[in-house]
Image (cartoon, rainbow over all chains, first blue to last red; front, side, top):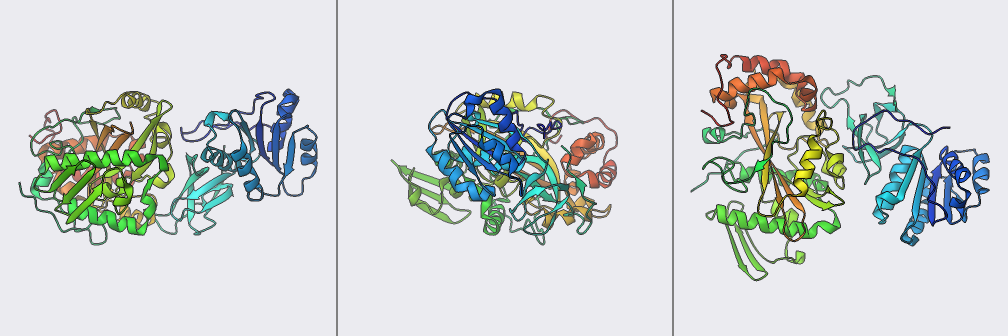
Length: 202
Length: 346
């Protein structure tokens, strides 16, 4: 799956310029699903990028082939996890142990990149040490502004909040701190009148 | 000077009212018969006795009721007041600025006695007396920013300055025109303004940021911003949109004059001395259309501004759905006469 080209949007919406090798420097690489292809392309362009890399990969359910390819790229450490939640403590430890000059490579969905970048920033990694590339579906990680619950992998607008059940419309406004877009009740002024959901476009 | 404080509400039965004097000093935001974004920043210096620009932090007849309304909102949602850990010093800076300004500008209402770092604060309208040690947060009932902003009308953001940008890293926000501090905290200047249409392409934010990064201590600046609100409600937050959203659809030709309010923000910006942060008070003034039109110049001008406003701005400011009713109402007060320059009544 190729890199996603997004349509122009508002300033708070993140852009994902793509992964560029910083050479054989200490690196944490976190990828999910189709994001593996971005790491594979990265290593094809410069194999030395893996020499000091700690790779954490969250494969799509039932996909063992992609992880096998990723595992053979010669990373210093390679770890597969069934979910972001499952590898979160490992990822946090890697961030906490990171020395000055460590680079972070993130690849996958907007939700994965958003929350992993927020975690890294909270751990003190400077924003310009974080590289990201979007691969995979254009689903969004949404925070409900009313109940504050986060709904993952939102594919339609409007969508139903997984926590409070309200119908929310999808804003482009994005919080790096939360790693999420903002969802707002679509029928606040006219309770019960909710338009047909449409697929989220890029 | 004696000040009378209204016993009134900004929710539920909405008993908020402006006295005739409060209407006369309402900061009408349009200095000409049309509106488009501009940086429109001017020095925040003492202007016109009796106006909202006379004092550094204007205190008016709504003070006590507004603080009561803030306390209700905070009880329901404590996330309306947040401060990232590195912002405590800026909170002290702001507390000092407000206390010293109010004690000097309103000696009948506020008193500040300072003996080194041992401070004694008296707020008569709210019945507060507090002895505390400046820069020691354990001597206040809450953090310094929360403490002083529970006693100061308007929302308040504290902006950290670093990396050539301003970061909204602390705030007290209970009277906002539909934005969420909890969502926006930690954002830089461009990010938190991102939802504003048109202004980015116009370069407004680039110029404003450049100006603000050079803001000097002792030289605060101000600007007016505006929107429209149905019912005199301070808490028009996205969080509570399901509560106030339905009220927006209750405007009729019969009720528009009483229900539809022009909402004006007097925004001031202050460089803080120790933290080098910027304090950004956003003071909200509400005025019903029925009261606006008691000043003939304002009735004429508001009609022309709202009639000719680009659709995108009416949509963003959230009154597109009522625009027709509002403009029809105001048209009755526009006889086509010329209006004088400036914002003040003739």
